Length: 303
View 1: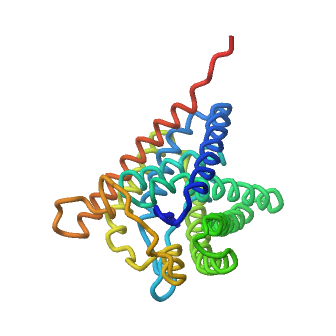
View 2 (view 1 turned 45 degrees about the vertical axis):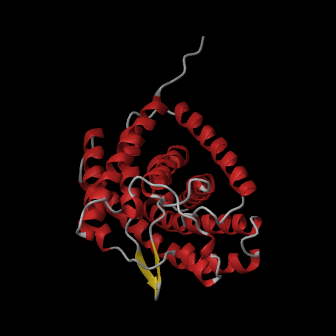
View 3 (view 1 turned 90 degrees about the vertical axis):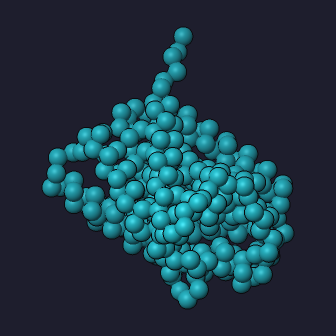
């Protein structure tokens, strides 16, 4: 659902960027108010895992693929504010390093997936778990949060496309919701499976130390990026499919990237090129997320 350059008008890009910056500022301030010595480690592990997972496109129907958004996982693991910051880091790395999503539309992508996606997921998860106790509530909450976060992001993207004059709202909204409902169901199943594994591990093992959280999350992300990403589906994802079907895909313009198309330059074997690029991206997101997490733990002294 990464919007490329050319799909949105300049005013929509400006407004969405301002809204994203404001939301991230609030998120950072709220993160600094909470005291969690494990937050930097969790942010690093979660961010790396989400980046790797987003590289693995899976087929959802003939000629269309989808990938994990990750906002629900971020919200459940980190809470809404650190989850929002972590998602924003993932999107920024994808944009500037790999050219996934345009630089001019980064604010809109952050608003859709990091801000709206994470906040909606957090609200739905909290609402569900407050009414249904125990593991059942957590798993159901994860499913509802994942599905709702994908639809919320898709709906907001539709509004931005319509406001930009790219395509009439009714048609683009219907198309976006239709394809992303299938992606949302897939994400719900994946999110529930991941949470179920985490809950099972929590009942059979002692609480993981900060170091083990970081190392295990990092190694899992490396494995996904290095072993699964090279074999991901090459079919257009949800937004790309909608753009092709509604015939506005030609508006997209390329954006400079250090490693375009998630392929390490100079590597002749395509699978290895993708694996190396993915591993490099995991490292970049891991370090960036940890750095921001540590910064968010620093308290401002009151005089």
